[in-house]
Image (cartoon, rainbow, N blue to C red; front, side, top):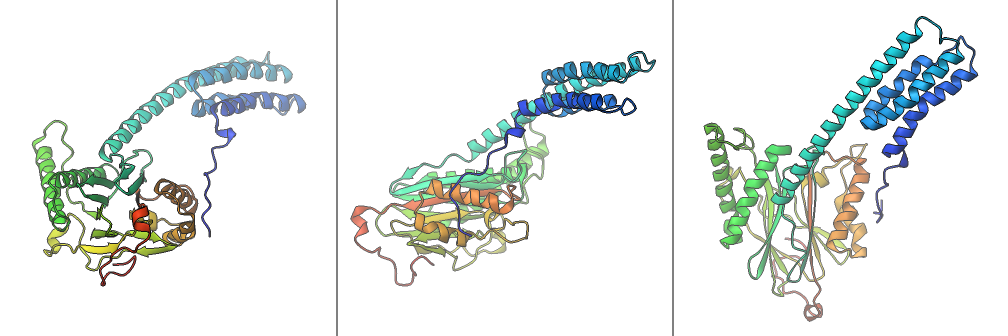
Amino acid sequence: MPVRVGELPRAGLWRHPRTVLAAVMALPVALLAVDELTPPDIRFGALMVAAPALAAVFCTPAGVLLVILVTIPCVVLSAGANQLLDAANFPVQLGTIALISLASVAASAVRLRRERELARSRSVAAIAQRVLLRPLPRRIGTLTLASLYRAADEEAAVGGDLYAAADLQGTTRILLGDAQGKGLAALETAGCVLGAFRRAARHRVPLGELAAELEEDYREDLREEAAAAEAGEPGSRPAGLGEEGFVTAVVLDVPRDDAGLVRIVNLGHPPPLLVHEGRVSPLEPTVPAPPLGLGDLDSTPPHVDTAAFPPGATLLLYTDGLIEARDATGAFYPLIDRLRDLAPLALPPRELLAVVHRDLLRHVGGHLGDDLAMVAVHRAAEPRTAGRRAEVPADVAQGRL
């Protein structure tokens, strides 16, 4: 199925608060009209008590009061139409509606307060996530970068996917990873890895030694957090939160010279995809390596692969929340097929991520089952390099390792 470049449908007018309020206010009026048109032995006045209760679910306290101001006259008019104003039970019915109305106003106020508290909590979580996942620079040398992050936990707005970029004076280093689990535990793990990556970047750690450096720093951070939690230090995170986690990751070093190459260390992560001249090529690792946190399973240093990254090409890094997303029939999202459809459009990185994200939401029906992070890196086709081929080692196939 071809990918359509377009927006997701917006929420309908019926979801607007004023529309909902108008509909609830219309309920007692509609019941009164039906009551006027039916025989006296068929009475709808008792159903009008539902209007304030429904308003408490959807409206503000002021909106509930408006509904009450409409409901009570309708109840009185309905009783008059059915000749019940003089009935001994009518004051009881009116008192019951008054009590339910007062309870509806109180319930609406409590609901509104909790919604505001949740909104503040989500705002704080979103700010924390943005601080942790600092925005990538739009350009570094001849590279154009873009990133996209969506948490599966919509209430918390945080998750364990991570990305970062660093300028190493002549080389651009890019990290994308996926911490085990979701929510706050995964967020802690992601924070440890990002801190270790930034420290390694400041110390100009070579790519071949980076995995060991990240592994050591990551474990040290977890040990410090566990010790602080056991000691009951203020502000420490709960003991055991994330301390047994692991992180799959892929790290790229992109030189700024004209070699047209990229060096890759893959730690148990889905392979980057190279999009160039209408082709989509997975950059698979030649030697599999365990994720961070499981380095003690294999004492061999991770292999550094080299692949072609010619001018005009785009690299897409992503987490498994993208390729493991399923539609209603259980089919996985066909990322490579979608990128083949998009390749002739030559979209800039930011637009490419936006289109893939919209298409993914259509595929899954609007709800993600896992955290999602994507980073797109485009290498500009410079005039001084457009007329000659990139010098690629003989053992490196074009677009593949």
